[in-house]
Amino acid sequence: MWEIIEAAGWPIWPLIATSIYGFAIILERAWSLRSEKVMPSNLVDSVNQMIKQRSFKVENLDTLKGSSPFGEIIYSALKNKNASLEVLKDSIEESSGLVAHKLETNINALGTISTVAPLLGLFGTIVGMVELFSSFTSSGHDVAIFARGISVALYNTAGGIVVAVPAMIAFRYYRSKVENFLNEMQIQTIAIIETARGERS
Image (tube, rainbow, N blue to C red; front, top):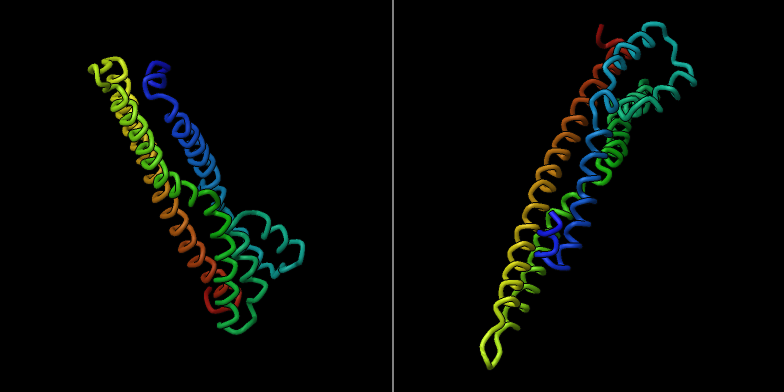
């Protein structure tokens, strides 16, 4: 591995730093976007039980709000359960927007990495080409410098692609996952509110 880094030259270091940052984001989002953390499996049953017992106490709602992102949306809806449908809809959409912002933390950075990494690779390619052409002199060319220039160019080009592809895949995957979470949370929240308002048994 060290031999590859040496062959790629100094332009590879920004790519290495970018790849480490991207990998850290992928791991962090994998941990933070677990289903059990975002939408605990027992939350709906707990809320329905609370509705049946008519225990809409402040402390219960505060606990619900801090339990999970899904809990935040349900909390906002339950606070406005007796309001008009328009106000109720606005409260769900507003809380969903806040939750979406939290769930999408760092995801856009992956999109940036997937765009920047090929450019860093291209920069390394240009550096390699400069070294390559510097090997030509009036008396001939230096084979060692020529080979070094090709090595720097190719390794950095490949490095940019290797960093960009996983970042783009992770970016699209996590964006899709957040959208699916939000859709499911809104659907289940509406069902809960219909139950609380007596519109669903």
